[in-house]
Image (cartoon, rainbow, N blue to C red; front, side):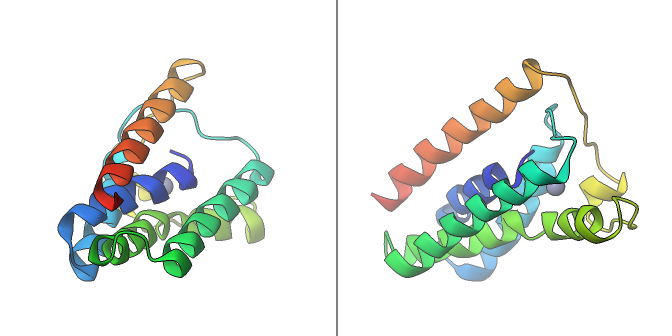
Length: 141
Ligand SMILES: [Zn+2]
């Protein structure tokens, strides 16, 4: 899935834990779980850069605005946990032409990472995005 959805989903699920460490680990676990959902990833680096910046902007908003008190702090750490695994993907595509060895389970091939063509692969991401936003909004309200 795209990194901004990983970040939102990690934040939403991390907020449920109520503590930073649990949130971070939940966010990272959600990354592998969402990568197992059939989806369409972009094929060039440029959309990934924009997507990564959107994810970072969202994390910055969580850090600066502190919405939801303890749940907001957990959301921040969950979002970091959800986003962090794609750092290796960004480094690989930006500096090694996509040929760097991956270590995160859903990137290395240890766990599933099925690709499906649009529109189905876009719809699965749209559904994940809506669920994450609704869950996060409810948790931070
Ligand atoms: Zn990933």
